[in-house]
Image (cartoon, rainbow, N blue to C red; front, side, top):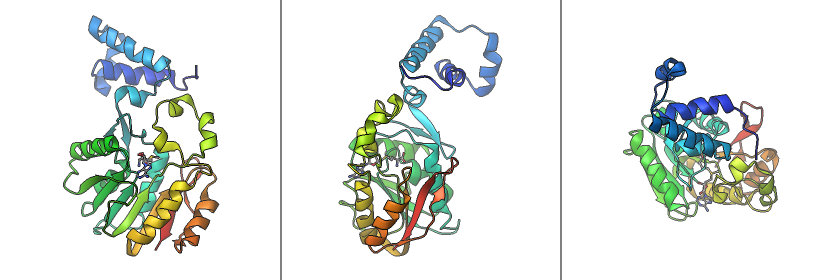
Length: 265
Ligand SMILES: C[S@@+](CC[C@H](N)C(=O)[O-])C[C@H]1O[C@@H](n2cnc3c(N)ncnc32)[C@H](O)[C@@H]1O
């Protein structure tokens, strides 16, 4: 069984959820006793955590860019590293801009919806090959009052899209297939394989993204793609080979890993 890195924090988050407590109530409840039902529910959540289920999967939601995103079995749990992609995308636009945004492989919709949340005049389309992920993204847009500016399509990359966009964003599946067995159980057993597996060299989806960018970027448009560890040179080369201009170096995440590559048409 894998080691739980933050047992105390996880226990408190699960307790808060089981007993439906606010932060203040959680602090005040230090010495309080729960009802038998509350205690049973809490024990059940703790057992799930001990058996290796990630906290976000147990709760069914995760915070990203300060916003709450519901999860489904077919959506990746949004990662803090991906906020670097949102930062890089926002750096190309001002608050008065109204970019048309395309999010390829939208999952929960977290990237697109974070951008629409920041740019109140932007509109966007999120696509995913998974109908269940698209349903989850639609629900998240509704919960965040962004449905009026976001629409979601089930599509194999841009196959069912025919417009052009000022901004294309994507966090594609990029783990080389041979590395999947080395991932932690929390990722390997609980995140959907379709969200992880980038094929033999981890780059299959980037080739598709480069082709999409050629077809879908409006004049002066920009593509911002998330990178896996060590992929900057290969992805940049692949984008250049497709006739795109790389605006390097990639923006690094908080761990210093080059994470968001900006590419222009
Ligand atoms: C790494 S996840 C990213 C999800 C979300 N954007 C995020 O950052 O949390 C990649 C997503 O791409 C989707 N995907 C994989 N292959 C696809 C394809 N051929 N066309 C469209 N979406 C695809 C997966 O279903 C998954 O939701």
